Length: 496
Image 1 (cartoon, rainbow, N blue to C red):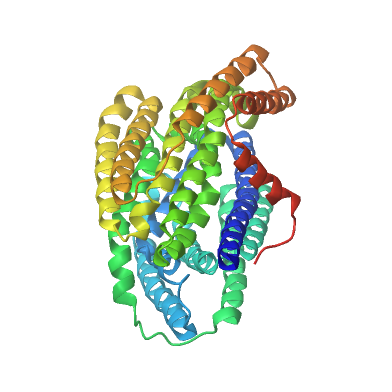
Image 2 (spheres, rainbow, N blue to C red):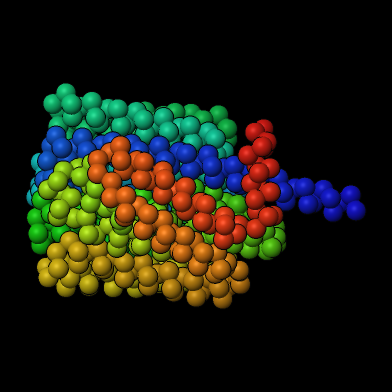
């Protein structure tokens, strides 16, 4: 009996820590999102839509190159280190991955510098930006690797504090350089400076934690076997998420990238709700799966899906209704007029992406990465082909539609194969209640017809209250869930 009580207590503490970690990572992601929202009006209003288009092309390029450079090896650390007890094995795993990725980054940087003229003409920017792109990519990838070490050790607080500090520093420097008249060049240099600084800080933390050693590459074959099938996933994800900017730039010009990118950024706000789950779930599910705790895996997936949709569904309706007003506030009337209509498509895409990211964790923890890779490759090919047809004909709306179709395909296929691996429950009744509550909330916000920052903030606050009242009246959450969250927020002590 005592053993059963202890087991139940441990399970409750585990879910409680998970919930608190979600809150901590959520706050971090919120601050990161705010930093992006701050830079959006600064660049668009002071430097114009075309310069914002160039900025977007540079940021997209960083993401593309980083995707190829890390060859998904950081994810191996999340998959295999959480259950590892041998310190030497941990050391060898971390530094083996570090050395391999560093070698790849050096080779890529040489190529960027060698072909800087061709690349700069393609992106429509000065060659100096390509020279800066090389070191930015190096430290961007290495910082991503080090961040995944924190995730593997589940040192969530330390990671969050460092992430918040980095984004605050980056935002302050970027905004300051623009206001001081240094333009995009100063902004890009600011990004490089901040990423070097925080690479040194994170590196110092990790060396203190595990030490440093010459790697023997003991498990690198196992790591590569797990990670290489994920490369098509990440590349395909980039194609779906970001290649539309290249298509728009090629067919319509950087001005239309400047129209499209701010609306896309606002539509992507829904992905903020999925970010904490995407960050925490891989290491947690891998640990419970390796310990044969299948029921825990199912519970995490079920609750994560429900809580994500509880926030994402009303956000979809709210963003769609306030699209034009929000773009007027954060950018310019010109940008709002040319792109507000794509926000509903992008928001729905991000909702599907969040669901897919949760349910397909089954495939990762069971090492079915080849299935994930095949699904994402097919989706990327679909997106790539449709962009060729849709963007020249329908403009930026065509790019938004192709993004939605690609995410729908990924979610449908990912759901099908994940459910074959592990059957889990989905609360369809709650989804129906949340949708109904969101429709009523959307009608309320539409009738308010807010204009300006102050009235839009009030509309969002009152809309959220309307949604919460309706969802509780409909009993969207049961008594057990409410009691669980009550206990989480009543007890403020840290759980380790």
